[in-house]
Length: 122
Image 1 (cartoon, rainbow, N blue to C red):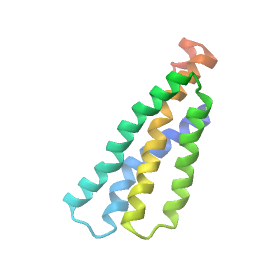
Image 2: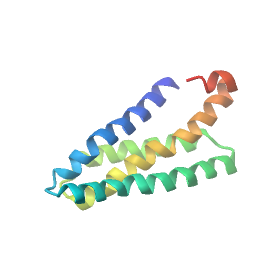
Image 3: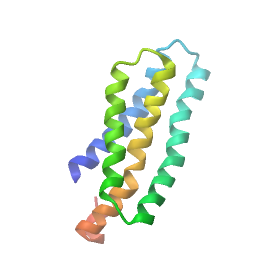
């Protein structure tokens, strides 16, 4: 479980650090880079709440954790072959949404599997 969480946190940290540079590489101004950089995080914030509600409603945590991490991994591979800003931004959005959507179900799952005190002490 620690390896899975470390991967998700590593992806979100890398995204926060490198996404502005990825977007800026397309020749945008600082203002344009900032505005485009906010799109994936705005969508990810909404998607994180919706995905967490879905996980709570169904009571299913494993797939609600695995699916966002899988689409995030596919989007990371897709970015390697992306040469256009208009394909890169949706892929960055999928990465952001995947990493943030998996955190809520993961923490619920860890407290379920390990007990409340142990699971949340990470």
